[in-house]
Amino acid sequence: MTAMAFGAAALIGTLARWQLGARLRSPQGTLVANVLGSFAFGLLHAAGPDEVVIVGIGGLGAFTTFSALGGEIMEMWPRSRSRTLGYGSLTLVAGVAAAWLAISLA
Image 1 (cartoon, rainbow, N blue to C red):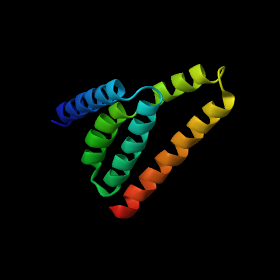
Image 2: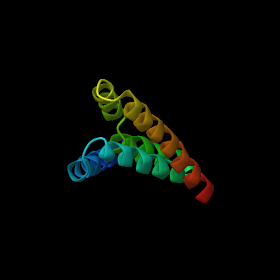
Image 3: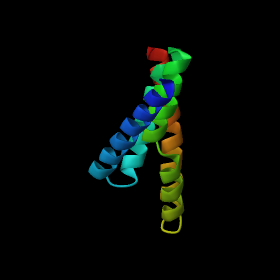
Image 4: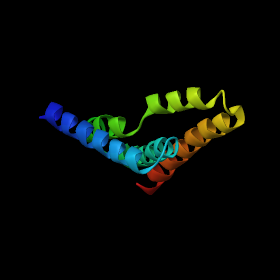
């Protein structure tokens, strides 16, 4: 049952990320997905191990997108190093802050 739930959560996370990407242009969509995913994962902090695996790793792992972040950084770097560093730093700081906020609220 856990494998099926994991797969369903991954499918939902993937479709949600796809819809977000269709509505927001890159890199904004990636930033929003990663910060929202960090916040949601922070909310799962107190959940049981099955919920963390299914919702956190399956669903939120599919929703957040480290590979897209890496690709965007590589694409942005030749055009504007300062913007690229700002984007990468903002993603990291906002993601950690969102997770911390969610953990403190849970």
